[in-house]
Image (cartoon, rainbow over all chains, first blue to last red; front, side, top):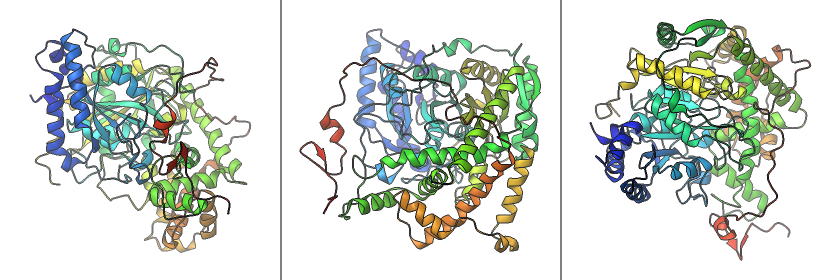
Length: 491
Length: 121
């Protein structure tokens, strides 16, 4: 087995026993990036030099017996999480020369845990998209089929984990941006409860929906990373002061006593691929065999999640993205000699079309005369969606659903049709609107060999229940063991 | 949900560019709306983008209007899913990043300040 193929806990064991060094492990990962990223396109920045320095430091610590689970482990980070001294672009031309003067809280925590940061990952510009095709920097290809999208917006994160170009990654999820790419690339991804992980240093898209979370090769690794980045942070006023359980201690097999909610409305979801539907159905049977008990639940307002989301998220984005004006950081059109012209030209040249589209939708929805009809209405519907989940969780512990209605689609297939792209977020958006945690775990493959993910959602701050459920399912199946063969794919 | 999904599906069929009935749909978002809002958001747009955005955003807002099928009378709006009241901290002086570090990324700077084009003539 190649070192880059290891999981975090496998690598940790070898590092602890001093059978390998972090420099060897990091070197192996950097070589892997050099070998396959030209085809996959997951990285915007490879931080080779600083990674090797960090690996040396990790090795020194290990030599002194100072080793934590993540010491010396190579991790990559979505390019909208600030990393001190490493360019952070949000995959946007407007930030393509931005070097943050500070680390996001999650990066601070990872560094303290001894992690080696190997680079920054591609994404849809400012996390707006479901395919990573909206990146202003480059295209990312799905490692399972290079002609297909990796999902988005954390497409680089999912592709890098699937292609073994890091042992784990951080992404962010505003409407499914961790879970959907995880599903499309056959890896595990968690969107934690809103407020569980600090957003300090995460470039804001829609502040009431954004959460940072891990993408990993399996559930155990996902639990390790989630534990490392979770917890209260006074620098984020929406961070919740609440203890973080030791997620790894919940990774036990068996689902006796776990009540699994099956939303009755999902069966009638239009556009749901039969292969996805049957993979989810099969997952349900596996869980029943493990002792789980399925109950029917109803989420009557889920169909309104898409329209509510596409008012709330662009509205918040239009306000958050007002800060990019060519004054404090990033690109400035220096040709314009008048302040207002400079703002307009900088923003028009700096933002890509999906970002502009959402700024315009958001500005329209918040503008005089339309606020009540759009933003207020959507916020009221959001309340009803939250109430649906509250009622459902009175009779179940977790809810199962597909992550995405279809496996990964072809690059270019939906780029001219934003609404169709938005509608494919149907199963993931509700968790962000309700603030609940959601996870994607591999649950099958299409006849064409593309991964299919299962979504497991839970109550606020019930990540440990998701980990237990996902782990039990994973141990009873072997979907997570399959690897894409990148060399033999046709670019 | 089933109903709203059917509505979307119907909407898609109606808005399919190959559908001969497309011309019968009255555009709600006009060219002028896009220009007005783009100006509020400090964006410039060429004629092509304006035309394209008018169609696409109209399409999206029609989908959004299915929200009107939901009775929200007396329902409180939610702006944050996790209920938290004020987050206070002690009023203590803290070390910041420092002026130079924060100016490092400025496109133009002078004597510890950001420089912008002339505002008043």
